[in-house]
Every structure is written in C-alpha cells, then in structure tokens.
Amino acid sequence: MVPALAMAAAGTELSQPDMVIADLLEILRRQLGMDLAALARVEDEHLVLQVLSGDVAGFGLHAGATVGRRDSLLGLVLAGELPEIVADTRADPHLTGHRDVTERGIGSYVSAPIVDGEGKVYGILCCIGHQARQARPDRDGRFLRLLAAFLSDTVLDLHEMWARRRQIWQKVSDLIDSGGPQIIYQPIFRLADQRIIGVEALSRFPGAPGGAQRWYTDAAIVGLSTELERLAIRRALAVLPVLPGDLTLAVNASPTTISAGLLDLLPDAMAGRLVVEITEHEHIGTNKHLLKAVEVLRSRGVRIAIDDIGTGYAGLEQLLHLRPDIIKLDGIITRGIDADAARRAIATGLVQVAGEIGGSVVAEGIETAAELATTMAAGIPYGQGYLLGRPGPSTGAAWLRPDARHSAVPLVPGEPGGPGGLQAPAGKAAANR
Image (tube, rainbow, N blue to C red; front, side):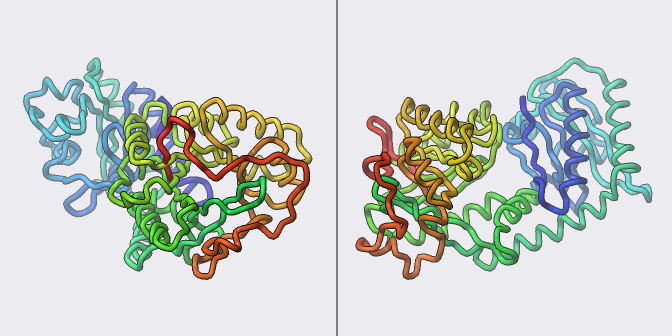
C-alpha cells in the first residue's frame, strides 16, 4: 500500500517538520505491519489528528479531524481506561460495540502517550489496523515509546508546530467565511479552428499571484480542503445560467473532495455540460470510495478528466483505473514540445491511449506558435494556454458572445485538428469535473 499522507506539500513553511513526522510515522506503520499511523494532540475536550500516514480514507479520517477525549478509543486509552495495546478489538470485552470498532473498522491498535518538555501530556502516537494481529505487546510497546520519546525530545517543538497550524486554520477559515476564492475562467479551444468550446474555472486567492496551490495545501493541512474546494466549485457553477449552451464548464476537485460527494452541488439540468478534473497525484488504486463516486458522477452525465497527465507514474495509474473521458496533458510536457522529441513522443502516446479508451486529449500551457503547431501535429484536438486565451472574470468575457469565440492567433495551415467540441464518447455518459 502506498501511503496517503495528510500532510503539507513542498512549498509551505511547514513542509520540513511535517515531512519529518510523516517519515517517522511511515517507519512506525511499516515496522508494526499496520494500516495507519497517526499523531494526535490534546485540545480541550478533544484529540485533534495532526499528521497521518497510511490508509486515511479507509478509516474515514483526515488531518484536522477531532475525536472526543471521553468517548473515542484514543481518548479512553489516554485516560487509562483502555490498554495501550489491543491485538484484537473485536474480541476485547471492553470494546464490544464501541463506535470506533463497529463504524471505523479498527480491528487492532498500538499507542503511546507523548509528553512535552515540561512533563505535560501533549497527545498520543498510535497505529491502527483493519484486522486483528498477532499480539507482541512488549516489543511493539518498546518501539512505540522509543519513537514517542524521539518526537518529544529531539525532532521539533510540537507546541510551536501546533501554533502554526492554528494560524493556518484561522487564515483558511476566515477566507471560507468571507465567501472563498475569486473565480476566473480560462477558455478551452478546439485547435482545428481555434474556436472556444468550453472554459475551466480557476481559483484566485488573496496575496501573490499563483498562490492557489499553497492555499489548497494549507487547507489540507488543517482538514479544511474539502470545505474550501466545495465552496470554490459552488462559486464556479454560478456562471452556468449565462454560459452559452454549447460550452462546457470544467471545475477542479481533489480525490478526497470527490469521495466526500459532489452531487448536492451539481444542477440536474446542466450536469451534462460539466467536466470534473481530478487534481493531485494521490494513489487511487485501492480507493474504492473515489472509484464509486466517479461512477455516480458519470451516471449523472458528468464527464471525468485527469489533470496533469505526463508528470509521473501516479498520473498514469489514475488513467488506468479511471479511464477518463478527457486527458489533460500537463504544461510541463507542452512547454518546449516543438524542440523535444521525448515530449512529442509522450503527447503522441497519450493521443493513442485516449483513442483506445474513447477519450479526448487537451493540451495545457500552450504559449508559443511553435508549441501550438507541434501539439496539433501530434494529433491533440483541444488546447488551452496564454497564447490562445488568458484566464479572466466572466464579466465581459469573449466566450459569452457566439460571434467572438475564436482565438486571435492565426491558424497553423495544414495541421490536423479534432472535429467537434468536447463531446462524450459514443456509448459513455458525458461527465464533467
């Protein structure tokens, strides 16, 4: 199993301490042969899950989630009412019928308290498993306590880390309360005639340009990513009443947000004009929640796109499992494609793959005429980028007027394009991100 880390990504001020703890948790999880390792902090009457590594979705948990100190399994362990190690929760009479066992599916656990430099209980370090396991209380307990002491005394000031997380939580919460990010739209073109056939909704946040990824990463750190993404999607969908009927609208969502459900946001009458772009390169091979949610979206007529294909194995794995209606070729591949045979080979290969699964390819990040010409020569029918059209607000946008939906860039003569708009492949329901 590849770990799903509920952690900060590179580029945030917390990346170094976060990754140190994530690495230690993953070592712990693998050493004990369990499914999830977590660090939780005491906060008043709750325990707050700060860092997790392993099968996060399988237990219905996420960073920033809280559990009660008086009724949760971890809270009862910390209070001394349950043992620190239980090899089979379903056979333990003290845990018969407990919610964490029956609903979250915790079949075994190993835990140890974490004490700060002043001797006060900071929180708890734990590993949990779906199934019962062979009891090794002495050995497991020693290893866990060793790691708990290492976290307390050597790695970092846990209180300082938590204070920074609280600052991030407040920043993201204030943004959510104020209505969320500004939404702008970038046109998507059919390259054969460079006509606009859809738009992609993009988030813009307070602060320096290009900071959207940092905001979403920060929101994930404190468990607010789904709420923030849903708010952004809701704001993006507000353009549908004025969006011409022959244009599609693409919105972005992470696997976590899609698994949590999007149907309540989507208008029944216009679902067939929506594209849902799955962002983030999370491991999805065993994520049954995501695969089921995708099928539900498809049943409503929404098309599924995979974003940033071409940048790594995880993206290719998504392609194999999801069989998307639309493949988005990442700008890293598009950029300089005219001067790089390897980039051209990747683009041509994805066109062939898309044809085999009944999908279409959209090239992102087209910025020069040479990139446009080469992209078309590779057989990619659709594209977007600054050369064709920059993102902007919907007010006064050219794509609202049927007579102004062509790029100002001259067509490249003699190069192939793709017929029609982003139509759903024959025999497949239309799906939108």
